[in-house]
Length: 263
Image (cartoon, rainbow, N blue to C red; front, side):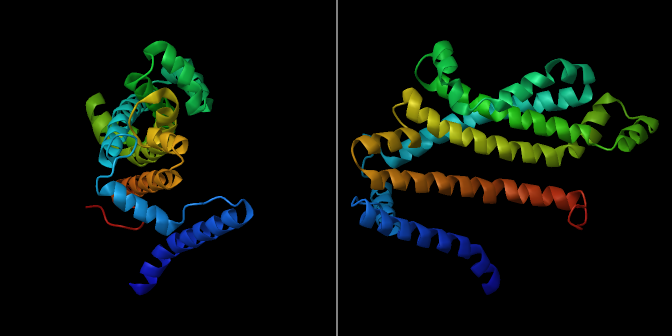
């Protein structure tokens, strides 16, 4: 247990040491204050205790960012999942639209800013649109690849046993593509989370973690900006280790990818 705990904490300790060393070097070379880990932690405690940040409490910024992200990511992920499954089942759909999805994957998230503003104007809809567009391509492409890699023997065997289209979809196709679905959702989550913060900085939402970082720059409260970065990282770690990794591990065990036994 001690060895496992050490291995788990070692990267975080190295990161904190690198952060502290960077702060000292910047202060010595450029003669400007650079927030240290301890100063950032103190500022985060003040914000968590209710001190306002950009005219709103920290929990308001976190809640608004999460709501925007869940709405945009959910929309993009559902669309990508449905497209990937449909294109995997119907070759003509993939031939007609597959290159469009690849093209969308090549467009950076911030490149959607002018399109989002022209369609929706400044505000929440534009931000949600950018998040959805960042989440859709990786989910769609990964799910499509997972369906394509599914062993056709299972489908042929199910048809020989009299399985209909509904049974083939829910009992063969969807479970077989589940590992790819999880991988696609993980990629879409990372893309959409980064775009959310960038969109809040550019589009001008009035609240949110990205908006708070920009406002902290104008008020020279860089320690608050670092505190927001810590909150962003903690949310990402919580989603990764609290949701996706357990789901991925359970899926791999279920499909004998780690030598586990099916439940």
